[in-house]
Length: 304
Image (cartoon, rainbow, N blue to C red; front, side, top):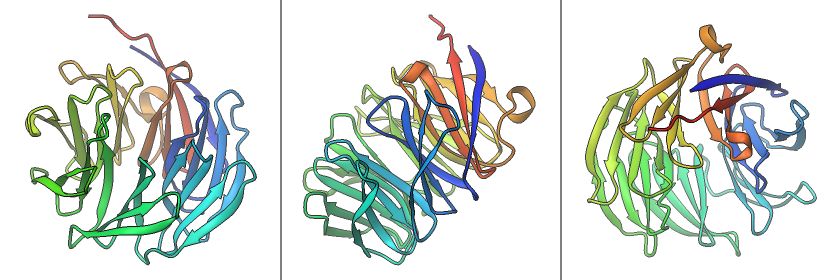
């Protein structure tokens, strides 16, 4: 596997906490500690467009392609709803005074992870709160929806992963195997696996087809793993860590294939916070506390 750094995007004035895809393969949004929401295009390197200034730092964004709207989670200030056609704020909702760590949109509902231990469900068409589920005495950190949209997983700072039914939001089971906060969750594109990770720097692979039995526990990084994501075809997944590195793993056998760091590939100088593996030329995008976004070409895939 060959890794080549294509470009570095700069423009944020503080740590960048999140990057999410727009409806086109080449476009994505970023946000962070400066409250800036910037739209980037991989076909026009480092020509970001500032589209909004949130009133507080932003950990979570979610894009609604049907309505062409961007959900912005302002820490301690609630949710802003941005019309991406006009780049104007349509609505705001002071749903919480806590941090907003994750937003996932599915089936006309918004699932929102809050720092006060609440999982909130909002109705997208009416932009109204429908459910408060008090799940933890500490933060809810991450949410992942299964590909078949029957279930979703929630990670918290009490080291647990919770599995919910997506139809009626009842709690199906809780997995308490991590040694510290769970920061990131992701289902494989084929729905076979749920991967979880976080402050303990371990990747845990769960069999989503057999009541989430633990398949493997990998001590993957030196420090906390902030995010993990799969390649578009599911053949690989990547992890981003507070140890400043990105690692690429083969899904079959869960084997480490490549390490991207400052010494070997001119990687990030501080914590890597979020990843986006784009369909656009199979490019991997990363953001960091160093206020930059890096774009990586991952080629070629190996055949076994």
